[in-house]
Image (cartoon, rainbow, N blue to C red):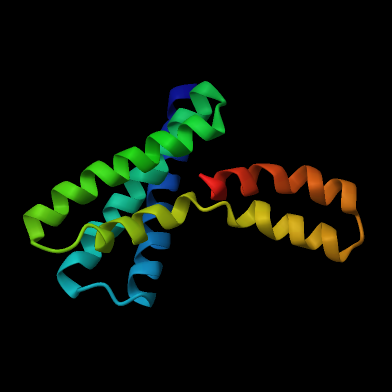
Length: 130
C-alpha cells in the first residue's frame, strides 16, 4: 500500500512537471522539435526532486540533485539535437522554482504579518540564491 501511494505521487509529480515545463517552453518559444523533449526532462527532474526530498527530507540537496540532472541531460540533448543547452535547461528547471513559497511570503507581507513572512521567505530566497 505504501509503495503504491508513493508511486501515485511520483506519477502525479511527473505529469505536473511535464505540464509546467511544457507551458514554459511554449511561453519562451523554444524550437518545435525540442518542446516534447524539454517537457519530459522537466517531468523527470521534478520527479527526481520529489523522490529525493521524500526520502531524505533535505530540500536543498533535492533541488541541487535535480538541477545537476537537468544540466547533464541538457548538455546531452543539446549535442543530440544540435541546439544550445539553455533551450532544454530553462523549461526543465522551471518546476524547481519555489513559486508557492514566494507567493505565501508576499501574501504574509500584504497581511502585515512580517514575522511569518520572514519565516516563510527563507527557503525560497535561499533556493533562488543558488
